[in-house]
Length: 376
Ligand SMILES: *Cc1c(COP(=O)(O)O)cnc(C)c1O
Image (cartoon, rainbow, N blue to C red; front, top):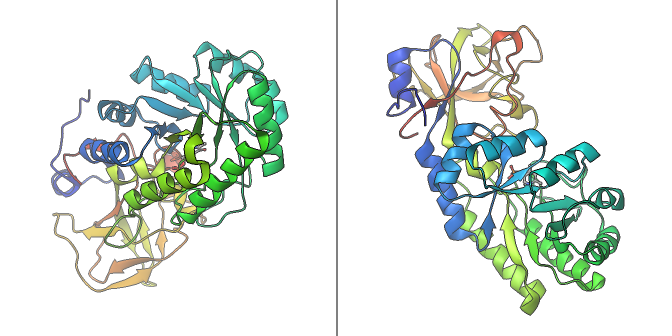
């Protein structure tokens, strides 16, 4: 599957190779374990939101761990998935599509489509009636790092009308929502589940499935990651309470929580300034792009070039990226050990989601192809 050598762990590679460019380390074992955790704990179909990290080695390892259905947003993502798994089930849950994109989705045999307005449902007239159409609901709920309801989703009134039309048109009627990414409050799922049950009741349509979205929180700070099993149990409990005997089958589509922990980014200290600012060789145009939109967390370890961990007392320091753009600075100061030295490596743990997917090569920087490791 991969040609590059398998290293024991990132520090073994750093100490030996002493790379002077940013390196993303990928651990297939962690990714597969996370996929199995979702499959064991979530009482429904687990799909993967490809946009979080669309690299072939990610898709391949998810397939190896039993994931066969994928949330795709574009023709390119459909091709990427089918290249790895020719009979992959495609859920096309970007609710705004050009008519050419709809035609492409039909040609790929998309199994499930989401909609949030009548105009988008009209565009699906040529879709075979064996397909599922999920009405996407938006609520003003809190709990996530940023809100997905601002851009997509019908309000309850609109959702009732759409769901009736989906059923009248002969599609398999379902509903979906997304509580917002890095959602740390399970009350968001509870609110959506009850609101979907209410929409279905008012529309007088029995839902085939309920897709509870992505949004599951990844481990960004502290010693312990989020208790996903507690969220899964809450979701099941709320679905049973809200729908009773008419409970639909469940689907989830994690992106971030699936792939976050399988990658660690190493960036090297290029220079230390007297003002205590630190310059490193990756930043917001590369593997740390998402830090502009989401809080940094504290999962950063520091290693000397020989591999030894720096354990001095930590204090916050301003960190600049490598490009000649003054915006290239991490939004929040990073707590770094006082024995930090030029040539050291900062390891940003849990960097698999929305990193390689959005990294640029601006100014000739940005991480290259990931290096595979046996553990992180
Ligand atoms: C982005 C997205 C996801 C994945 O969200 P995460 O917060 O990364 O889990 C799932 N479903 C849809 C429709 C999305 O747009």
